[in-house]
Length: 174
Image (cartoon, rainbow, N blue to C red; front, top):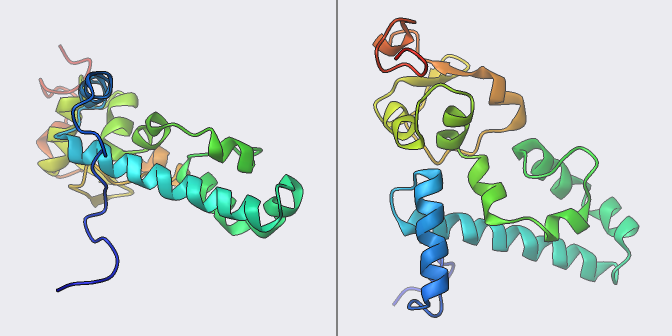
């Protein structure tokens, strides 16, 4: 018998057969090129953890947002570093985060948004096949959360054939 922390990294929905939620999940899967609902549930679980931490900080100071911001400076700076919050956002904005804010920070989405791929599915394929590098280091994890300071460092790996400007699979080469 095992005890302890949930090691799955995500929680499944409590009511799995709700039509509206299923439709929303399918829309997000298509929009962000996710492989399965597990990737979406992982992002939702991460969002729940972030909100829970913010509520705990607000609870420690009994709702005083200025005092809780002083206590939670490390928490807020880590969220700003990951790009979930803007430079002037506080704990109130943490509670208003959506799952799309989490999904926007994934490497797969960043590659597509920067125009390195024609579709989000193609960006996933480029990443998995090792064509994408961050600061010269190859990565093959589409779920990698791209920190703000690494956004501009995303490019094609120099040893990849797709690094050639005339490659037919390059975005805009058609």
